[in-house]
Length: 329
Image 1: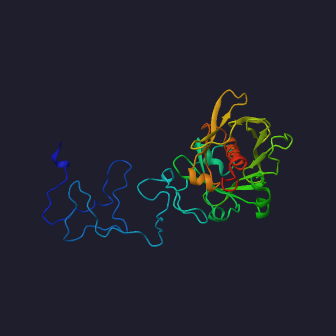
Image 2 (image 1 turned 45 degrees about the horizontal axis):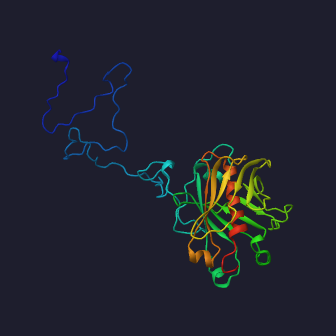
Image 3 (image 1 turned 90 degrees about the vertical axis):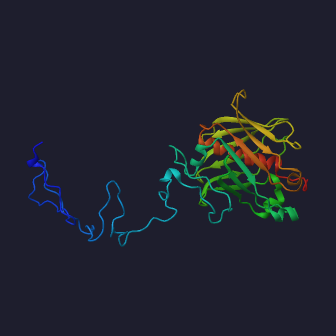
C-alpha cells in the first residue's frame, strides 16, 4: 500500500482529532460526515475518552424529555416479560371476591359471542357455590352465588342468582330463576333463565328446561329434561333447538363419601364425551349447607356456545337434585 495515501495518525499528546471538513470527499454518494448533533455532548476537557470496546456512560447524556410520559407499572409491555402475551392475571376486581387471580382474557375466536372467549381455551370447569352464613344459621334460602374457575384455580366467571325472597320461600328448589354470569370486570356476559316447571316425574308434559343467552337477550342454547321413569336425562340443544348432546345421570342421585357423575354422551348414547360431576364436599358441608362443588369436563374443541349451555345444565342439575341440604329435608 502506498504510504503517501495513509493519513497521519501520530498526534501529539493532548491533541484531539478534528472532524473532517464538509469538503472532504468520501465514497461516491457520501455527502460528508455530519457534525455533532444538538444536545449531544462533545468531548469534555480533562476527561479520558472511551476505552476501546467499552461503551462507558456518556457525560451529559440527556434523560427523559419534558412531557414524556413514563409507562405505568401495569402497562402490558412493562417489565422483562414483553407485551400482551405475558400479561399477569388480574386480582381484586371491584365488587368481586378478592384473593384469587382471574384468568387472563384470551383472544376471541371467530363467531364467538363476547365474553365466551374464556371457554375456548379450556376443557374443564370447576364450580364452587359460596356458603351463605345467614342461610346456615337461620335455614332461610338466599340467592345462590358461584365462583367459576379453570383447572388452574383462576376465576373465569362469577355467577349470582336473581330471584325475590317470596319466590325462594314458596317454590324452594323448584323455583324459577335468572342466573347472571359476570366476567372479570363485572360485565354480564351470560344469562340463564329457568321457567317454573313441575318437578314430579309423573307429569312428562311439564319437564324442566333452562335457556342460555350470550350476550343477554340472544339465545345460544337450551337444556331440556327427557322423561324417564328411573334415570335423570337431559338434552343439550343449540340456538336452533337442534339436539347436540345428551346428559344421563345415575338411577340414585345420592352417594355418601363419593362423587356423583352425570355422563355427557353423543346423541346415540354410545360415546361418552364428557361429564358433570357433583363433588363430595365432606360431612359438615353436605349435612348443614346446600353449597355444592361441581366439575365439568368436555372436549377442548367443542363449540363455546355448547360449553356455555353445559354450564347451564350444571346449574339446572344443582337446583333439581342438590339444592336442599340435609338440615332442611
